[in-house]
Image (spheres, rainbow, N blue to C red):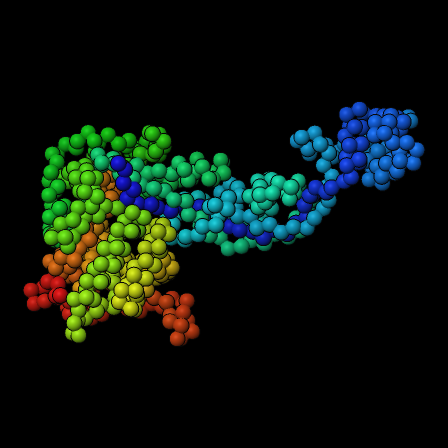
Length: 542
């Protein structure tokens, strides 16, 4: 069993171009003309009588055929013999099947998408997708390569013309043979093509990332570069201290606690046998079973969590153990992964339904749901995030009769430039969040992820650091309606939100600025209303 716990889309910078040009396309000629040219091509030269005899023609019929060949500029007479002109011979040069090709010039428009490293055309199966919140790769630090994209695109259009024709036209008969001339070329907006990288974990806790199937879709000259840059980018993420035991203790999770401190100081073979990529070695990953093993050495790791047993017992045989009298369920992997999406949305729907069914006239229905985002470059870098958010909004509107807001709560240093904060917020708003809170975070919570609808249900995940890596983390935790967990999660959320400095959102349609980003100061008083979901003991109040 292998569990896919995350998918990250790496960014391939690309640009679409509108190219107006004239191309050479095949035209039909009379069958007799084609066969006469083929005959002379094979024979080299023939007398008029021999040519007529071959086709069974006499007198005027032979003269009519010769007139047609002369008008087309296909034959000439040398020493009383008929031979092909250089123009006619050229009709065979571009042919791969020994048949003459007769061309005409036609006007055409093409809209190829070129990646901006080697300027190879990207196939439509990739260029048709779009997701800007991708993991950026170090394509060209100087930026010089991309300053003359129109000139480069013009050269690439000539060089890759036949590949572009195959991508644009399934019907071989409609494809052009060559570019006659380019009349005009216009550059479109640059964008990122998302190339998915999948992260898997097995029952023994070995982690791999797989990019093989995705690389096969890329032009050959681009594959090795993408592979190398992806490995380097994953290895250069920010590192965070491990506070797993604090996560387990604060949120009082019995299942995770059962496996904490369950392994000796020396890592078991099953967790230390993964191929290791060290900082002082070339960043080339070894092949194993057509997958890529990738971790960064961390000899100081002091992990005390029996991850192998946890995966095997909680998620292997139990497929996500239920506990707390059925009010909690163990989760492994990012919430937006397809398997987790289906399970999580159904759990969330049931929670919404139960809350409404047990409500009274005095029940307070929360209007905002909060998603505390982990401080990780590998989180949310896939269009699956938008898919999950859409499902959450739809199921809430269906169960409660009205939608709610979903607020992203993100880390943002006080010194971080506003332009950078606005850029990050814009990506999250594009994914479907209603608002984005940005500002400092609790020192120990960089690996914490919490999705909470106050008073209803919550998910808490810890991005557990692989013992042999400082940068690869597996999200693990729980979904819960249990009162003690919800109360503690709400207290945690309140502390996190009170540290935020900015709230960024888009203007409403009422002010005519529905796409314009707006920035407001965030204040601790904005979250005082959380207390209405707590009882006097500081726990969740039903």
